[in-house]
Length: 73
View 1: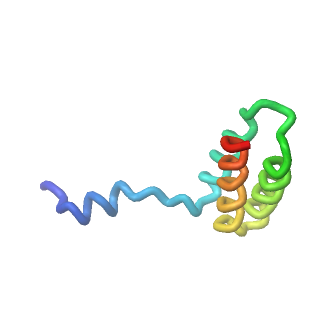
View 2: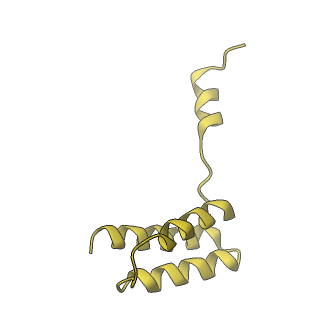
């Protein structure tokens, strides 16, 4: 049975507010060349701490900001 367009979109949707996504972002940051410039290191540390405390949505936001800052120094 084929799924409708909306059902397929729902199946393919990724939940980025998950502890697993936090871990993925932390891993990506850990692969960046060292030393990390400011504000990258501070944002990454704060994001990881928020994820560890269960505040995943805020943690993901900080980690994504850290990655953007690292890409645009």
